View 1 (cartoon, rainbow over the protein chains, first blue to last red):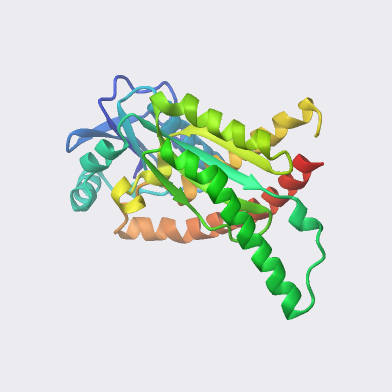
View 2 (cartoon, each protein chain N blue to C red):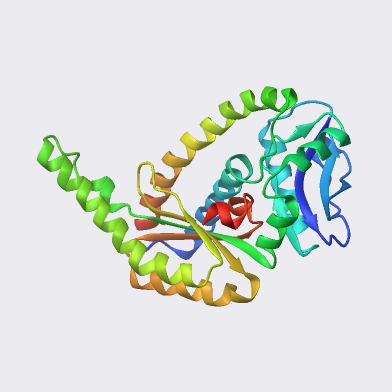
Length: 217
Length: 67
């Protein structure tokens, strides 16, 4: 079985990293890109396999002009099965690579621990007041943080926080040349809001935008 | 604000969470054959555990960051 890590455009050399289970990385030419794969004996969903997948993808970023990362678990019986799946893809791999050209992904989450301290409301009015407070806080974060960050990004995706202390969960597709300015904007917001925890990670391979920026936007 | 020495583990934990979130939940999906749907069953299970861990972990991290 072959495990797919990513598609890469103008890959110079394969990184020295091994594939899941220790097998060597290989490239398979598809359209005008390389599929980076390795042979695996069986389905392996261990934590080690998940981390190895991430390691391979990140090692590719600096060795090519563009990467479309694959979600963990894309496995194919043989080269032909992978090629056939690639041919069915819309937008095509080439179109997605062009969308992501020269860009990396930055993740920005904002956490507010203060909400955790407030007692849970027991009546309807208290519940609605608490919910409104959360919504207002999210609007404020969107205005003061997301809007300036969005201006520095080619595309962005904000995931509505599902629960807990997370008040903002954003992924930003940022041109490499704009990384410094982007980081400055994040630092400025974090400096102005010591009561919040701002978690900024990256640069990542553009996982969140692998569907193409048309779809993402 | 916590001591500088306490910040590194926080950042490492967050980076690991973000990586696992990306590898399991994002990225291009080609799908469409039996091999994959077999893998998919396992992945839903693994992904769910990670998601649950993430929500709790972010709450804990927020409290650590604010203390």
